[in-house]
Amino acid sequence: MSRALSYVAPAAKAWGASYVASPKAGPLLDMSQGVPGSAPAEPVLASLLKVAGTHDAAKYGPILGEPALRSALAEELRHKYGVGAQQLSDADVGITTGCNMAFLVLLMLLCPPGESSVLLPLPSYFNHAMSLSLQQVEPAYIPCSPKDGFTPSLPAARAILETARDSGSKVKPRAIVLVTPNNPTGAIYSPSLLEEWYALAREFDVPLVLDETYRDFAGAQPHTLFERPEWRETLITLGSFSKGYRIPGHRLGCITAAPELLAHIATICDCMQICPPRAPQLALIDLLPSLREDLDEAAAALRKRLQIFEEVVNSVPGWKLISSGGFYAYVEFPEEFLSAQEQLGVKEGEKVGSEDVGRALALEAGVLTLPGCFFMPDLEDKVWGSIKGGDEMKRDRWIRFAVANIDDESVKALGPRLQRLNELLGVK
Ligand SMILES: Cc1ncc(COP(=O)(O)O)c(C=O)c1O
Image (tube, rainbow, N blue to C red):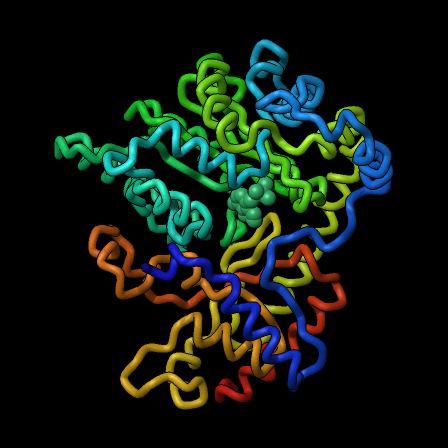
């Protein structure tokens, strides 16, 4: 099984555990996981405490979530995207057991196994690639160039769609999936860029699926796609309560789509989840509008942290921030590391890659991250043969830093750690 399709997080965890057993450069800075660093807002905790022990919360509930929560969430989305109830109604929104499950359920609906491909930007969120693999859906990777701040290439996507249309193959593209703000690169796609993707999806009559798990951290420019009267024919968006509301363990996500599509989704969800967890739904119903300020504050704090991160990283010789946003920053490591095979324990003649650097960063400098290769197929995988323009990605020069679960001071402490690795690997 290729690396992108296996579960990669434990490898990084093991580096962290090994460092903690014999620290060399101060306490471990864990920048590996995209999870919120602080507790949910106080009213959320209080409300959870109140409802979780009730009989109501223990009962099964509606398959696609509490109607009152669907309604409250629809109102939040209307507020965010500046549209009225005709453009986005309560019936367009369903609640799921987390965004990952929403994605898997959507694949089950849209993609007959063995006869489907899905366009996915590369690097890609590994759970998306794993879900495709589970469903026997082929990834049609769209390479993202660091030169474009890791935005996916529209011409490459068009070429994939044209080739599929002209080939008559039984494997057909069934969706274009974009993630913005992106995991792993942090790249935020502008409203005008998303309009272009939407137009491409319509031209080829494939759904455009936007995973907006990090939508509360996208900055001031929400996309304009819900303003289109016909959006339900093309657009499906996925969301999560894990990051903005900081309740990842309570497992709530959402899907926004045409009500007819949600009716089919409900059939699958009935078999898989029966209903999303009730306690967090009941706890949130009356709170959502009052949490807007909390969301904005958390987003502003993260933006500030990413600025500090950028200054710190770019001040260390050879390190360069390429893209950032949401919970993540994607960073190129120094070119000189490529000739540090010996220090990195890389066999002679073999290429130094992001995994070697990620390991050394953890073991020698106590900074736990996820190497870029964890978000791509194994470099030996034959799938690369079909990725047009994938050579740039194969340079494998990037590391993902997650900034949500550490504080500003820890980010400032990163500079000397990177410097330490530079010295060990011979960068002046
Ligand atoms: C792009 C993306 N989608 C989905 C998820 C999972 O969200 P949830 O906790 O709602 O399943 C994550 C979590 O890291 C993510 O980064």
